[in-house]
Amino acid sequence: MTRTRFTAFLLTAAVVFSGCGAGAGPCAAATSVTSAVSTARAEGFDCSSLGEGRISSLPKGTLYVQYLEIPLPASGSLAHTHIAGFVYAIEGTHRLEIVSGETKELTPSETGAFPRADRQAAFVPADAAHSHSNPGTAPNLWYFISIRPNGPFPGQQEVFATPDLPPLHDGAYTETLVFITLQPKGRTVAHKHGGIETMFVLDGSVEVYIHGASTRTLGKGEGTFIPADTPMQIWNKGAATAKFLAFFVTVDGKAFQTNLDTSP
Image 1 (cartoon, rainbow, N blue to C red):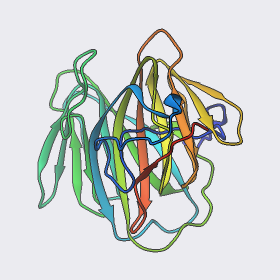
Image 2: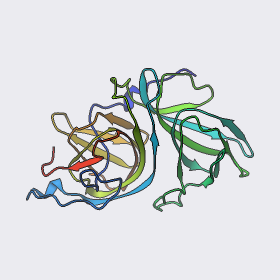
Image 3: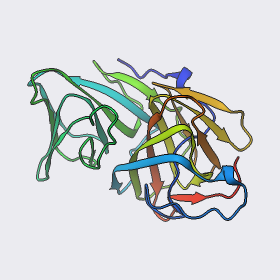
Image 4: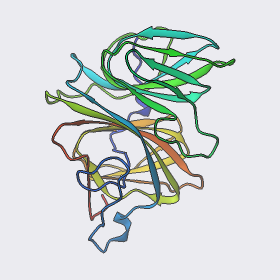
């Protein structure tokens, strides 16, 4: 099918995660917030880095970030090369084999369990010959998450996509995927990121606060995008734990995250 824009999922608010100091990597220990404003600090928050990968340059053309849902039947397989991105297992077992590289078997965490790095997601480098296969006896299901040019995706479902992105800097970038949980009444630290950010809600709901914008709520199956260097904070004001994926594309030389001492 041709690219579908899920405009109901696209919000002008920002949302990602907290817990990293200025320039720190995903899920590093949070730096202290010097302000006496307690609401700027994280509470009931946790995250797991699912991996990162470096790309020497962005793909050519008009770019956007896409979360693509792909099924494979039992014993099914496909082999190809394409742009860089992350595989994230949703159902069943996913075997990812990179030619002249390693083979990984990715499986979803047990219900309620926190994903572990390299167990549920894996980075696929740009133009690396690789195969996806299903060694199980039932169909599997997985996401491929990437920054990519417009294009058709026959037989696959785009579950979330950003608008077309503005022109970006030339040079090398790092792609990062993180799994985040917010307990009921929990929140991230007030912060901003040095790169493009997207998120996609897996369970529960979150409220998104961004300086200068109205508060927005995202539920399961909804996502959003925000440009770099924009102050934000995410709250879970519901009764259930919220879980979401965050995908980042950060140009070399930019700090990954900077914590702020004031809530937006």
